[in-house]
Length: 450
Image (cartoon, rainbow, N blue to C red):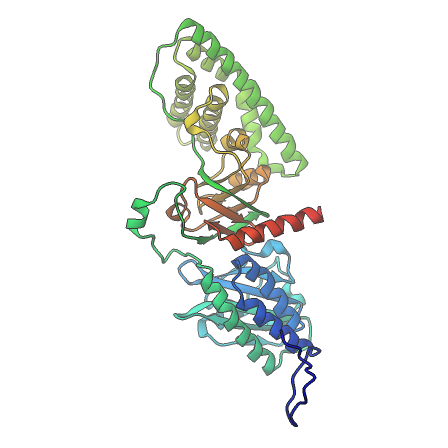
């Protein structure tokens, strides 16, 4: 970079603006920052911080258009708790931010909480920052998102609004390069048919809701269950070994479930983890154990014996008029039987690779007993994974987790490398070298903090 204070004579009326003007320096630094290629997460983290500094504001939020193009999701922020990122959502036209995107014009207020269009989010406590401005971020064919800046006092001037609008245009280029995928874009059938597991090369960024914070990278592995096996005749020595393995599986499962219950208590999950006591009761039910042992002793084999026990419990529940408790207990027994099969006689076809990113519709106790043995580094679930039990199990699993991922099974295949960013609520399939480098830098920073 050339010296901004050259020794050569300057013509009358000509001035080279060297550093020293805080606002101008901030704008030039921001333009230089935004001009270089970078991972989306870097843009989401850095842009709000830099813009807040330029405008001398406490809060700056970056919203992206997602879903069918009608939803605004806060993906970047400085000033609020990190836990709100990915959780604060608006429809276009909803709230003052939604109005700015709907009309593609800036919206301001000197005291936003009193405005009729104001949308209150209890977790934000944003009434502390009532001076408000929202500007749309425009793309080639419509809005890409919005920038929102808030202060405790001192109204925004016209020049502030003009500058923020221009900075939004700079951000638009970075967002377009991120290739955010939403439900409006379909995967070409030809590409889907020819694609092999682990053979994807196109980088795709899917969005969801952050649940357990953190970031991790690994190969995608769909959660799975033991394969169905045909009936087989067991030799006497095999039956004896099966009975021994089954008893061992019951003991391992019992210790593991009790350990999970203890951990849930230490995490003060309370009633949210009450369902674990049902598993403790099932494992302590001697009728359950004896029936499984009886079937194994008859030469049925462990998988078929436990499958039959699960079916018997299900039939009993179905024979009683719509008893929700028995129906749920039947599902729990089935879940537990699958886990016992894996604990007693490992099924190679149902094993997961180590250090993987698990993907699925939901998480179950089976996964804490079995899938956890592969030491997964992250979890991504579809929009079906929002139930209270799944959320409790995710806390117990304690790895970076994103739920409600749109298009998960449309774009993800076993073996693909994926990056889970549960700070922003993103799943990046086939991440770029820059994104992998950014993750390493993030890990180093976390280690220094620890």
